Amino acid sequence: MIRLSNRQLPMLELFIGGEYLSIETAKHYDQRPFRSMLIRKWINYRPGRGFKITEAGRDAYEIFMHTDIARKNPLLPLTAYFDETAYGLKKPAEVHVMRKRRRAA
Image (tube, rainbow, N blue to C red; front, side):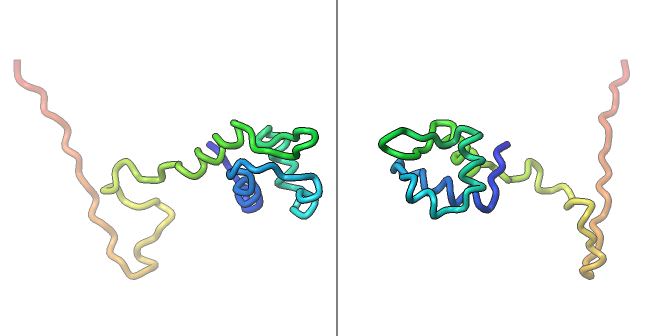
């Protein structure tokens, strides 16, 4: 699972276009996400050119942007942390699941 902070995502988006970022330009941005992306090797520095996104950085961005959040079975009840009665809703009836009968021999 890829986790991006509220600072890392916008910083990573600067690099997605494939442009190099000079040291002078990099000085204008918050250094915390910049540092973390260097440590994770999501960006690297090329002398004479500047900072550029790596394949690992591009992969992290793609995974983050395309993570599926759909539930496998939407018919199941909501999380136990949601209290229907607090919002004036009726609690859904308990679903009784019947077991398969064994056939007589």
